[in-house]
Length: 304
Image (cartoon, rainbow, N blue to C red):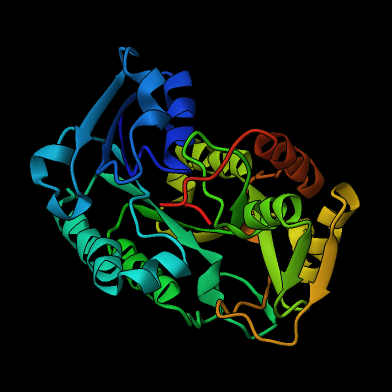
């Protein structure tokens, strides 16, 4: 089977590519390498690994015509990056997705990396039947793209919880990753909207969800799935306390609101009913990040 991963050198993508190659698939990535090539250099000599350096906005039929599965991860990710360049966020997240879907043949299967952030800040329990209420440009563009994806018959959208964990293309802007870094370097955490609830998932478990789609595609195609675990719905203050239990730091609760307004409890019953289970706990993820930050210094061009 031939698989294409857009954004294959990114935080999630390079991890997914490794797992797909380990499963024996032929894997091609399309990536602009905005954040460098180091995450995939060790894969260059793999006989089943192929690389196309290209901005996703310039994708052509020839890039996808021999591919059975497309994992569409290429995006401007996160509120800060989208606010910094609203034009690129729109053209990459929405316009390029529309172009990609138009190039697909009916039998090609596309799996989209969506986000639970599109549920907004209602404070209520949300499942796949809940009406999205995207507040930021990031969540709005991801929701627009998801609707485009789901117009294609053979499609699956995975609405991921906020990811955490170590990757060869590291992101320190993700909330857990960022809190651990701040706790270690500043010895303090300032928590905005401390009682707002978010939901988290380790990167390894996100990859397991992608592999689940490959195994159960006939059952899952045409549907949207929240991807995470019911046990990792935590308030931001709960998250800070978990970190404080492992790192000597102060936690300050701010009365100011967070620019990134999110507050919801997510139900993961639909994907759990298919056998999906998360393995990595929040505390194990924090310990992994502590080990990383003992020697790793974020790239200021990418991370905060």
